[in-house]
Amino acid sequence: MTSPLAPDAQVIDRLRDALTAASFTVDAVFAVLGPDAHAALGRNETVPARRATASGDPLATLVRLFQLGDPVARVAADRALPGLVDELAAAEILTASGDEVRALVDIRPYGDEQHDWWVVCDLTPGLDAGPVHVDGTHVLGISEASSSLARLTVRPPVASALDLGTGCGVQALHLADHASRVVATDVNPRALAMARLTGALNGVAIDVRDGSLYEPVAGERFDLIATNPPFVVSPPDGERLVYRETGFAGDDVVRRIVAGARGHLTPGGWCQVLGAWIHPADGSWQDRLAAWIEPTGLDAWVVQREEVDLAAYAEMWLADAGHRGRPGYTERYDAWLSWFASEGIGAMGFGWISLRNAERSTPAVRIESFEGPVAGPVGPDALAWAAAVDAGQVQAGERDVLDVRWQVADDLVQHAWGPVGAADPAVVTIRLQEGLRRERQVDTVEAGLLSVCDGDLTAGQALDALAVLLETDGDDLRDRYRDTVAEMAAEGFLTVTTRS
Ligand SMILES: C[S@@+](CC[C@H](N)C(=O)[O-])C[C@H]1O[C@@H](n2cnc3c(N)ncnc32)[C@H](O)[C@@H]1O
Image 1 (cartoon, rainbow, N blue to C red):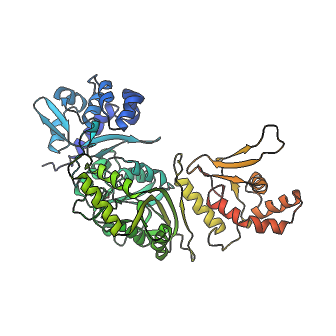
Image 2: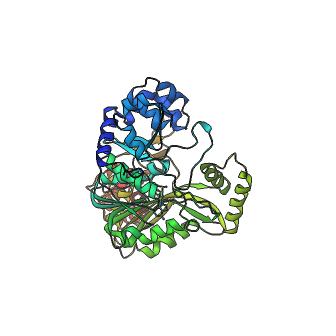
Image 3: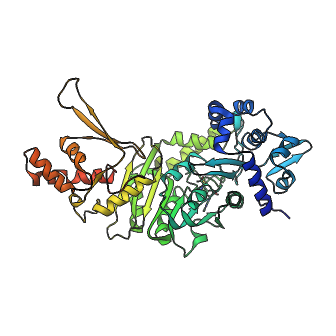
């Protein structure tokens, strides 16, 4: 007998064939919908997409069935999924009644430059401004958080990777592209089944395991751990949506993941966490995170992407759970704020924690806020930071950063500003074009240094040459610019790697 969400292997093969035959891909769906209907669907509005999918051809039918959650005529469903409707209904992927077929789950085209994948998740709730109904076992599709973690993850080829809290399996798909072995864990049986189906449908081997945090991988180590855990900090009021709340107090899920990382990383391994953390009303969030990280002995790069005030935070997550507009909304809102106050919470932070098992006696820890927009993958920024730390022991100060043959990042550009007609610019700024797209203002010496850092000269030699040019003392210049070189290396302006 077919179990829920677990059709036979041959049904999965035929489903893959049908989705492929219909060109059910990100690009083809975009082409059918057009940019406006596609953008509207991104805002959970289905009307433009419904108008664009009236043809009844297999691709249009699949979009209506899975992405709009619409009922489709049996004859259209049979054309899109030949001979599969009853078998998919037996696996609780579809439901068929009379002449009508509906999807019970979403099968969503997903991909990157190299891949066309499908991800199996629950149907999007609250389309067309309808009421949001999510039950406790809801399996989220690809969220902004999923994409943010996928961009952050470092992607050199590795032997093993762990996707902790896999949900629909999206991170596992990405990891399988550069890891020989991928383990994916979850506590939600529905997520486990969906992640298995996502893997099977894409022909990607994922070892899916049941259990909380590191329990299913006790005694195992990985080269890479990528996790987007349920990090919502909410009052323990009995209501728990497993995709966003663990039941651990406050932000303890993130602390536990950080604390456990060292025991599950191979030498040189990375653990990258998307998370939220409490800003204590009477303390520093940086000190709090540093206290989580310090006992691990791991290198760490923490980037807070956003600080959210408590009212906005409560509103966001109450709306996410569908409470907005329902009876009891204001009472719940009030209860959230009372709980925050009773816990001494001042605000919430959200961002990235990248831990690296560099096995260093004095770990390098960098904790910063960076709220600016990012462009493309951020994994290369993490790798560049790690390489800079290795090259110059930038933070530990074990080696003089002036002895390193830095080169200017290959995506760095310079802007010079000043009055029209002036011989020299008044202000020079440099800006990285990719990843975090950092920017900083530089003085004459820094601009000169950057112009000669091509990997041949050490930073010290470059400063000596500039000292001669500027008729100033070389030792003095070295002393004055040592910290600046370290900072420019830690921020990726000076590097020992290339992005590609
Ligand atoms: C925010 S979703 C992330 C899903 C997916 N990895 C992504 O990036 O979109 C968090 C997932 O963690 C799972 N989860 C909840 N509690 C957990 C726990 N204690 N241990 C492991 N996973 C857990 C949830 O069921 C959910 O699938």
